[in-house]
Structure formats: structure tokens, C-alpha cells
Length: 496
Image (cartoon, rainbow, N blue to C red; front, side, top):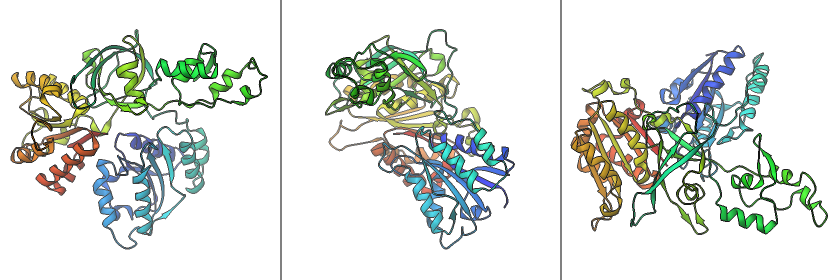
């Protein structure tokens, strides 16, 4: 009753890492603090805690993280004032690129209030790597938990610089790029290989990891901008602790930029004053990183990506255009590897409920399009580890143009390294057919594999494929059984 419960709802692991830091901060200030995922909680468990701190991420368009789905549903079904004894704080994580920013956090806040819980302070939103939200969270804890030493501990806590636990960005080399689907009805899909910085320690990651890439504007865009304003692209400026050219600073920044900074507008007609270009650089906002699933393993000696080229009315998408069209071979690409806990390989312990266990437990891989990248990393890891009971279900448009996945998987099938492959091409027959249809057709096989302890991995588009697969799994296995798989870590998704 006296301990502060720090409860987290996490998809990629960020909310969990922030919860761990929060609990450590509370303990450092002399408070008793316990840590738990919301998947282990319900209204009855929550009401036994007088103070609860929630750190909740949002998945997709306002949905709870996969592991929090049952918790959210149970809370929505609870009635009365079951949580009247509870006082809570809530840090909601989200991404402003989505319409339902921090949607699950706000939904959780609503349900807690509906059940009688009282907020300690108003909900705090955190957008990506928002540097201001973390100090606001710490200040709120110090101001409302009334514990001696908490304010001092919060002041002494290191700042939250970037994603918790993520490495710094480093320049990798774009070593190879190839079109996977010439002639496809879909957008071009490119296979990329990037090699690590020379002399850097050998990078390590596990199957299911993500890479975050810092995009750049193309040369033509920068030339037009510099020419229009008469700015010297080679003027030296300081950015992120380094001296770079103004052109490089603009290449990594949000455009358009303010053309009239105080230093520039205060200049006489003619030459801007000293420091004008630094003043301009100080107004620039950095471009946000873009995430991609990693399609290789460290032993391959390179980082493999599958990048779909996106086109808008104004031209290529920023990141996909840079990676697939504008960056020349041999160019540096700023990136960092980040763990993806919701899509990491399942521990052997998660597969003990079936007849098969440990190294012989089966795995089912489901995806479409560029989602083959995330599935491929897992398949390589299992094949190289001698785990050959693998079932791959993959969807694309036309076999004639989009069979890049089937072409590679054919070798694994022939060698007995995967047990089954179902390849579905939606445009190759009058009626559209997708991977969820293949799942329904193989319902008996699916149930047998799950009974044998199979872990299900899904990677690809959230709209359409992932939603359809989720519905098919619930239909074949039952909603409660699907929730049980999520709770056991046997249903893992990397969808976007």
C-alpha cells in the first residue's frame, strides 16, 4: 500500500526503459517503488496501490501496445468506482505525426478517472525525444509525491538525451543498392547494404532490431534554396557541437527555414554582419529520424534494409528518396541501431507451453512488402541456429514482378531449413487474396503449430495486412487464446 507502483505499457521498449529510470529515481530518493507491466495488472490489482505512476506508449492510431490490449479492454469493461483509492500520474508517449497523438495515454487517463481514480497532476505528453517532457515529469513527481529527497534526486538525475539507451548516430557507408521489383504495380522496393564506419567496433544487434536513419535533402533542393536567398553554402557554422558548412546544416534540417533572422534583417543592404550565418543555423530544427526493420545479422558484415520508395506530389519522400535515389553509392548515411523489444526473438521460456520446447519450438512468420526485412532477420537467426521448423506466409502483388521473398525462400525450402512457405499474390487472380486468407485456409495447421508452442511474428503494413492477420488469428484461435499468446510473448509484431 505504501509503495509507489510504476506501471508501463510499452511496444518498442521505450516506455519500459523510462519506467525503469523512474523507479530507480524514486528508490534513490528513499521511496519504496515497484515496477510492473500493465499486462500483469487489472482494476482489482490497481486498487491495492494508493499511488500509481503510468508510463504508456501509443501504438498506431491511438491503440494500446500489443501487450496492453487485454489490460485496456478489462479496464474499459470495469464498472463503478473501483479505483477510488488510487491517485495516479501519467506520462503518455506518442508521435505528433499521427492524428491520435498519445491516444492510448489519453484513453487510459479517461478510464482511470471514470473508475474514480484521482490524478496527482495533469497528464504529461512526450513526443518522441522531446527534451522538455522528461524534466516536466520529474518536476511533477517531486512536487506531488511529497517525499524528502525526491526534488534533489530529480535535480541530480542525468538529462534524457535522445532515446534512452540508444547509441549515438554514426556515419555508415551506402555500399550497395538494388531494385527488387522491376515492373511492379507497387512502388519501387530497394535492397540496401550499408557497412559500418571504418575502425569502429563490430556492431551487434539481434533479429528484429530497427535502424533509425537521419535523412538529408537532395542536392537540387539545397542548390535552389541557397541560390534563392543568396546564402553561402560553404559558410562554417556550429551544429550539435561540430563545425559544418551551412549547406550541411540545411541538408539535415526542416525546410523551409526562416529566411529573415534578426541578424540578417538587421544588416545593411549588402554584406550580412559577422555571425549572421550562425544565427541562421541556430534557427534550424533537425529532421526526425526514420525507422526501418533490419534484414540482416551481424555475422553478415553489413546492415541490410528493404526500403519502399515513396512519392508525393512534390517528389520523393524525404528518407526513402535519400536512401533509394539521391544518396550516391559510397555516401555516408547517419544511422543508429536500436533494440525492438516487442519484436525481439522470443525467449525459450515463452515457448514452453506446447508439446515442443526450446530449440525445437516452431515459429510462424507473416508479412507483406518491405515487412520481409524484419522477418528475414529472424529466419536467418533460426536457420543458422539449427531451428528449421519455420512457416513463412508472405503477400505481395504479382509473382511476375514481386517474388523477391519467394525466390530466396525457395532455397531454404529445398534445403529443409523452413518447413512451409505460403506466398500470396493479391493481383494474380480476379478476386483479391491476402495472407490472412492463406491463414484461414490453413486453420487446422495453424492451430496445430500453436498447440506445439509456436511463436508468431508479424511484420509489414499496419493497415490492411496486420489488421487482417489479427482478425484471422482471433477467428481461428479465439480472442482469448490470442490474448494468451500476447501475454506469453508468443505473438510479436513490427508493423507500421
